[in-house]
Amino acid sequence: MTDSISRSSRTRRVVIGVTAGLALAIGAPLAASAHVHVTPETAAAGGTETLTFSFSHGCDGSPTTALAVDIPAGVGNATPVVQGGWTITRELGTDGVPTRVVYTADTPVEDGFAAAVSMDVLFTEGTAGTALAFPVTQTCAAGETAWTQIAEDGEDPHDLDAPAPLVAVGAAADDADAGHADADGSGHASDDAAAADAEAAASVASADPVARWLAAGGLAAGIAALVVVLVRGRRRA
Image 1: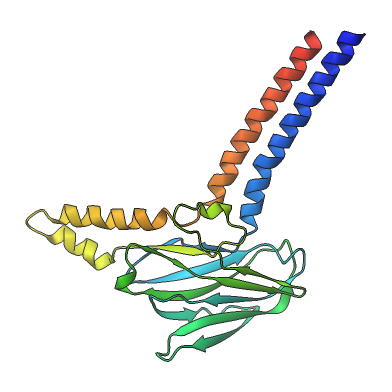
Image 2: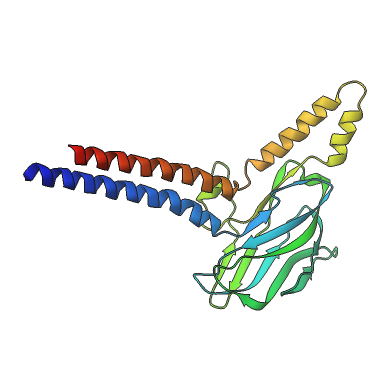
């Protein structure tokens, strides 16, 4: 009787421990998915890219009423994309380039519903090899969240509570094309440099949330299999 109780107790502790680990594995991707994301996360210097800022949450359950996107230095222009459901206003700098674009929802977006806003952004050639942050302030019916944190050197962006969306800027497309046309073979070096610039900039940008979900899913499946093996082993004993 005592042995049976002991085995049952050990099995229960194993299940509790594994369940806690599973909760952590799933909780991390869920927290990451609660951020405001930007797509695409890469762009070419000297070119224009349509950036889409998306979210599927409110502020602690409160519906979203507005998104304000701050335009960083290095952007030559930012043109909001008109889309239904949003009223758009801009704050312009002395050079006429927007410094902030505010999207106000015609109807508050309920927590748990996906929504997105977009703008066409011109990246100057001087931004090649950098990662530009686009801080976003999410205003809700009750409260707001400032997605403005930027990782410092050596800090993992995934450890931030409210990271700003990042866009990694690679070398200008014209430079890469010119590299192919070099008769002396230096075009290969230009291509390598462009790839290195993009890779270096992308290393500080946030990772794909889908990849984190897949990794967590694999971990969860492995943990579940371990639970089954342990429980069956205890029963046979």
